[in-house]
Length: 431
Image 1 (spheres, rainbow, N blue to C red):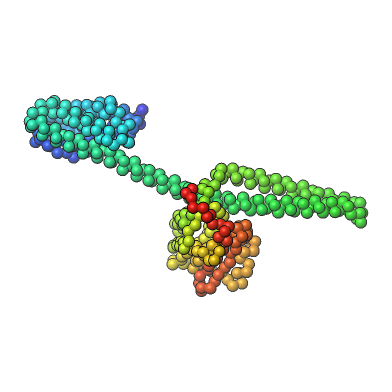
Image 2 (cartoon, one colour):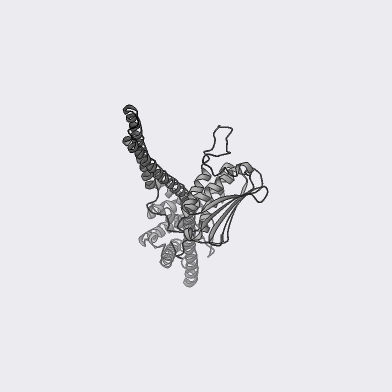
């Protein structure tokens, strides 16, 4: 209730203030103001406040505001100022009653009815004010009516235009926020998808290890060359190893199920265009670069655009490489350039940066698990060295490959190739 009262008072005070923007069409005390536009707009904006009660508060605010100005600034007596401005109170109350009765808040999506309703209310209230002022015969009826009607139509149109501008601007901002969150969700889902892929691969490896372990157990069981105590000990160790591996597999399976529940029920879209993938990655890393306060110019170039159903895998691969490039950049003129093009039956991605580069003796080792040159002297932490290994494994799944190209001095280029038949989605459809 307190919140509503605050809004009603705000409507009244702001309308009274904006009411000072006015003109006198007939050379009398009767004025046409911008205040009515603000009053009507705020009734739409604060859609929960009662219209009639707000009209009364607004009328009183306008009355006291105008009386105060005349008394304190124009040296008009209080009685004369009160008599001069009391019709304005009647105008706002009458206007509020008419638009409330017509249910004008429900009509703003029907522009013609909305304008007709507000115009009618404005004309009726203005004529009532003229009658109270005893000024209805100062000019011919046609002149008075045409002036008041023109002002009413203009004010009604301004209200509608102002409200739609504000509404569409709010929708635009909301849409931008949704797109930003959607892109972050895409990147997060891509990371989860790749991690689930590796967990599933590990489960297959564990399954193979369990089978081998159990096979060893059976071999030992059938081998009588060992003495009974050694045989029992080896059999027990082998069987326990099989059981332990099986338990690890079950734990992995529980993790996979939990992670898949965190992800969207189905793919966010069946396919994505490569240009959309680049746009998403660009937006995410542009914000990331701002956060870490690095001066790096990101560039993305597409010579061929295509739809792909493997956008999570592609996004994860590119994210890992670009992340490494960002960490390698240290100069004020640093840049990272990603491009995509077709070469025969392959889709080729190139990610180039002018960072610190990779030493010649390290080139053969960078794709090996655990190899890393990243060391944080402040924390003493060493990178896991699994980023490029993960990329290589993801590409093996897509029947692709990754290589390092250092042909240009001072520029590191990673080249990723994938068969077009594997990643390109031929059907041209809107998804």
